Image 1 (cartoon, rainbow, N blue to C red):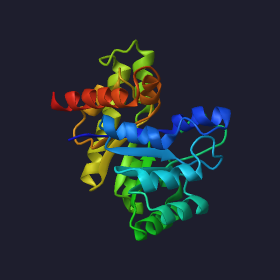
Image 2: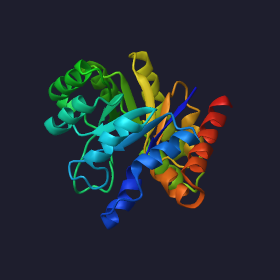
Image 3: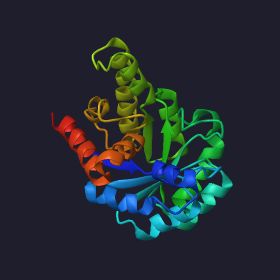
Image 4: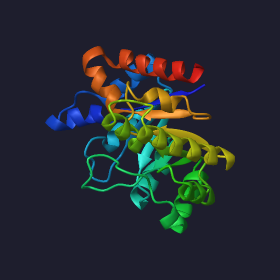
Length: 249
């Protein structure tokens, strides 16, 4: 059955806008859990623009569902992950100039370094993942470095969906979804778990959730945005309902 990982970074974004103590990402994680989330995702960025070190420590101590730590493949972040031991560490590209993660990690271009990072995380008992574009050569590279999970970047599909009048039968949308399907099939054939995420919302989530073999969707901004109006539990429950409905159909 498909699972939902809720990214709570932007709860911390609101807090950091005032440099205060609220809203509390840990509280958001608890509410997401009560709404049906299967996991919590946070991205501890080098510039600490939203999630802070103490947030990750408290989440590790207080959450009762799996914690997915998004991180750059740096010495600092590997050290933090090995100390805190989240259930999963997902390697992502990172740049201070970007608003959010804007593309997949180029695994094929840095296999040797990433293989060492994956080995260190695996030795610490952490499931390793990479966030990659829906490209077969990146899937093959991910298999070679030894990760157990890949999250396919769904941003191009989501943007095509928005730009094509929210028509999931338009050629551009169908083409992007087919890329994700092929990448997911390749992941599964290579023995890796097929996750997906980025820019998914309540209007575009179902076609992706219906793809064969997809195990988890990681969604943040859309859920936090809706939670402003209906609360985190309701926002999470509605997203999960849409995902499960799509998979059953």
